[in-house]
Length: 484
Ligand SMILES: NC(=O)C1=CN([C@@H]2O[C@H](COP(=O)(O)OP(=O)(O)OC[C@H]3O[C@@H](n4cnc5c(N)ncnc54)[C@H](O)[C@@H]3O)[C@@H](O)[C@H]2O)C=CC1
Ligand SMILES: O=C(O)/C=C/C=C(\O)C(=O)O
Image (cartoon, rainbow, N blue to C red):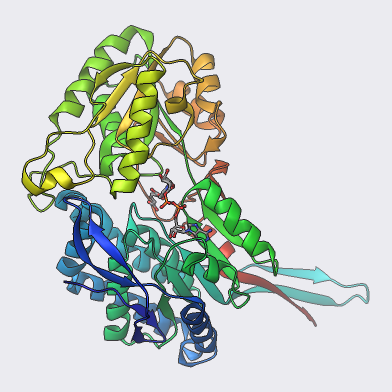
């Protein structure tokens, strides 16, 4: 049995209180997690603050870059350990975790190590009233101690997406992984020690949100900035905590993302693309598609083709390389998703496929499984078209004109991502401009260049991360004006 300790100042810390980490494949116990109380969170923040003026601060940029590359190598060296930990915590299939989660966990350090060595500053000469001149130039300094609050859907990927740039910029971090997925953040602590990252630079505190480690961390006055991915309502609570002391936040929040398929799209690619965006990671991706709009001439054919895709997924043991569909993250989350499956039926949806719990063999019958599900026939006001479900399901609505579909796609408080399928270049560019989202994919989905901006419009987030945009949050930009 594994146990999951807090990682504070380079040391493994237990506490008097534990909670259970369970494997959603069969609801079996993975092991206990030591919940951090106020004292442990305080110790982690103090350690992170002390590390800001220790050997970490004294490192030249190139030394920090080398250290980040050592972390990349460390993750690759322990690839199988990370893979096993992520699969156990989430139930996600081997094929997904080995191609997406763990490689991206390493890449998130590499991209920011490369960036920080190459990023230019700004400089302005100016004339002065005494006929002299002055020179202005910018320097970027670390923001300080960063509180990193993470979700469970892509645990290593999303945590390192924040920790990578934070460390590249010279900050120190206190990470609060999701209570559902404590393993890979903990394992990363071992890598940090193995490669010689100074104590206090990377800390991990385990626990829940309210009245637990999440709240204690985000309310802690020693935290200089908070980066968070998760539900919009949680973002509101964290923002209130951050208001005390006027600490900046960077948020990537919920979504209700549209997928739009025009009649001129490459049909097979569009079906495969929407199948991925609706069902990958069992629909537990904030960028995923839960609202599909298909132009009327191909509507029936598209519904039938997506149904066939949904019914072709292989559910089963995530370690089996043929499995491409896993359970939801927990029994609690399954209750939420199944409540929407019931709501869709109550609201009069046509259930094209799925809508319930699959028949799983043996111990897997105890796991958090749901069927991939497709609905049609509901009005835009229906709950499953308006609210984030975060499950493997989508509703498909027909549309006639570009104007009509833009209106429907934008009719949501969210604005994270969209995926549009068309072969008409004009349509593609017009949609790219008209959809009120942070990320618009054309003829693709989740195609990530880590140098690009990433984040959400409206209630889907605050700020952008990725490439140089991450520097805006993880550094203070200082202007130095020298009168010459
Ligand atoms: N990437 C995304 O956009 C994600 C969205 N979700 C959505 O959120 C729903 C609920 O999932 P949860 O895991 O409960 O998301 P959540 O937003 O409640 O939790 C995310 C993280 O925030 C922490 N947290 C919760 N309340 C907090 C508080 N008051 N102060 C500080 N930290 C706090 C949690 O412990 C966890 O580490 C899902 O059903 C899904 O709809 C969930 C996970 C990821
Ligand atoms: O590629 C990324 O950086 C992030 C992808 C997915 C999410 O942010 C999410 O599901 O929350």
